[in-house]
Image (cartoon, rainbow, N blue to C red; front, side, top):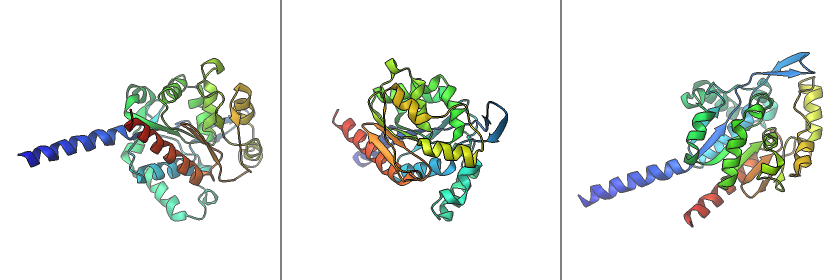
Length: 265
């Protein structure tokens, strides 16, 4: 009888611990980006490698995840992010990622942001991958600043990749908990390259680095296409699709620090 009781206690403890380790991924479901004041448009969405490299690093480290989009629609994937050049010659990993988004039921049926907010205490961390899609829907969603403020208030690790640091601009300066933090994002030079050679047009939302500096964040960047990210307390931000290695290292470090600090409370 005592042995059975111990097994039940361990099972409940493991279940609670697993739930307490959950990470929330917020993804864009926008698929069209207007350029040049609406004169042209292109297909957009989340950059696959920015999403999948972070997802794989986190889940391989034992953290379960949930996916959320604004209305619970399936995430949109930007065709540009599937190209071989963003995968550092690891085409097997690219095929793995493509298979995941085509077959994984949880990924294909995300929760809505409303549900994510109602379950916010379940999560110890937040990751928002980049891609121009977020500039269409997440940047204009009133729930995004609510979520960012909650994770900041609780000092929970928050990872923003490439274009995602622009979401820090959704909070007014006087209400922004990240003012004075070091932050990284897609660099001005990279934005120009994207607009001139990849999209061949200018989106409405641009000049992210300048805007971050203007509201009082301390913008730092590496060279174009460098593997670069910045960690300042609970905030981890990275520069581009080639920054996955250092982003993952810093975000896992932030998770470890949070878990250790939680045990001391």
